Amino acid sequence: MRHAHIIGAGVAGLSTAVHLLNRGWNVTLHESAGHAGGRCRSFVDATLGCRIDNGNHLLLSGNGAALEYLSLIDAADGLTGPDKAAFPFLDLKTGRRWTVEMGAGRLPWWIFSEARRVPGSRPADYVRALRLAWAGERATVAECLGADNPLFKRFWEPLAVAVLNTAADEGAASLLWPVIRETFGRGEAACRPMIARVGLSESFVDPALRFLAGRRAGFFANHRLRALSLKGDRVAALTFEGGDEAVAAGDAVVLAVPPRNAAELVPGLIVPDLSRAIVNGHFRLPAASGDFSFLGLVGGVAQWLFVRGAVASVTVSAADTLAENDAAAIAGRLWDEVCRALALGEAPLPAYRIVKEKRATFAQTPDQVRRRPPARTPWKNLFLAGDWTQTGLPATIEGAIRSGRKAAETVIWSGSRA
Ligand SMILES: Cc1cc2nc3c(=O)[nH]c(=O)nc-3n(C[C@H](O)[C@H](O)[C@H](O)COP(=O)(O)OP(=O)(O)OC[C@H]3O[C@@H](n4cnc5c(N)ncnc54)[C@H](O)[C@@H]3O)c2cc1C
Image 1: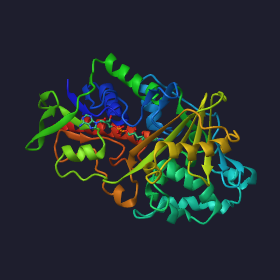
Image 2 (image 1 turned 90 degrees about the vertical axis):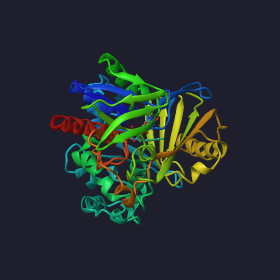
Image 3 (image 1 turned 45 degrees about the vertical axis):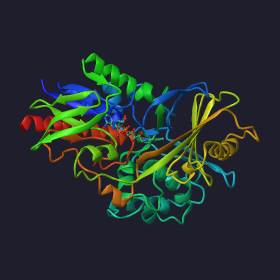
């Protein structure tokens, strides 16, 4: 049986492993950290006294590869969310609230209902989104959608910044279109917001590790790959901290590590080399308020607020400037916005945790998108996976999982021709 050595146990590496195991390959997964999950993980926070995710991760019901992966690892019930596609918003400057509610069919008749539209927007503003479909490689989101209309400020901008983790005036329009096409373009059932039912690790990571264990795949944490030994057009051996491991003829190596690490390991590999930060602020609320709710925020620092039980979490994407501040200063600013959003008056700052992910994703600008490499490399048995590889999608869970599926298909296809 053929064997794949997968380096990196984020969701891209896990997805590669699951798809290869499913097709009868043997798999060994090596991870440098003490745990799997990478940028998509949960941990116990002593200050808050509960388990939290490293960041709020929102998916949409049209994220087909993510749903397929969850079903393969027997975690099809791992996501939860409202049973209709409704996106509530608050303008922190004016206090105005509204909800964008999509309709059931592919044709967006709901844009003709003033009550379901963004305040101040006209049906023609929504039709303008079709420009994304023809956006050239160099176009930015703001150029395509026009930054001067209420729909942009009150819907497209917070959505695009969250999806691309890049400001709308530099974010690549070509990456936003596939998301719109696969979700909003397919009607209400494909654009329902979804989050992990308990936590990211409980949905995306732990069931995958159980899937691996059940198929006798090896998983080695604290096992950093230091170097690849390249001989001719193949990887001949892997150098880990503990020693070398030979790569047998017919075996494959999949690098599912972040772009900087891949560039250090593979000579001459061109990768996206700029990143953007995401800051999440988690606050303990005076009392639990229902199961789960979320709110889009405009006119402030935070873009999205999630409330789960007694913890309110806010997300700031493209947050490089904010991340320069110390945690206490960030907490003060974000808590003020949480109080306004949840009508908590001037409640004192509660227990909190600020999580700064300085390299949350690559900077999804047109120039950086052109640096994404494909799954195949010039070395016949070396393949790439990760949210930064050429998936045609933004750097998201859906993109990372799809990159893993693509890497597995490429490994199998190459193996069948060797
Ligand atoms: C705060 C935050 C919020 C986000 N919000 C969303 C969201 O709302 N919706 C969404 O869909 N996506 C979101 N994302 C993006 C999503 O988390 C990522 O796209 C996805 O997790 C990337 O997975 P990956 O496997 O490609 O990379 P990673 O998770 O980075 O995995 C790479 C793994 O490789 C390991 N590694 C590195 N070097 C080595 C080595 N030499 N040897 C062995 N192992 C190595 C690393 O430790 C890591 O575990 C968010 C990300 C962050 C950080």
